Length: 222
Image (cartoon, rainbow, N blue to C red; front, side):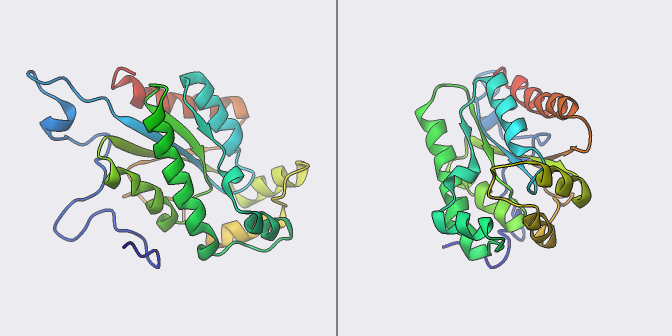
């Protein structure tokens, strides 16, 4: 049984058990050889970052451009979680475990049922490394799955301004501070993460995010 008190290690001592980085040399059984065609992977694309960074806008753009199913992470929160956030109460780790597991399992289900788009796009704040590790477990269940995170990076000031301007969303501006309080920006050894500066125009961010996805997908002939 996994414990989420600490982050699930990417590499166990003496053994690399992590999903292979995109640039790594993979075994012949995975990438194929002259005798065996390369295996087509399924990809889970997590669009991540604090409130106000534009997760939904970017994720919908990627999904539409590639014909992939899209999962809006906020829709999978429990009513109790939504009420806490609506009233300005930060979620705890305990509040998030079932939500993260549900998003991971739903992503795998969408990949399994098709259509054959070889990918699914999910929005999820994934503020801590151990939250990202919960999603990474999908690759342990199915070695044909590759996990990628697109981290939308911006200063707290920029995100506060954006959240303050939007209406009708339960995530208020006061929650931005609480998210930054626990935020763990992706570390250099998290090689499955692409970071994108979202302090620029939305069109620039869409372009760069889609380019990252297309580069990976096109390398497999998707």
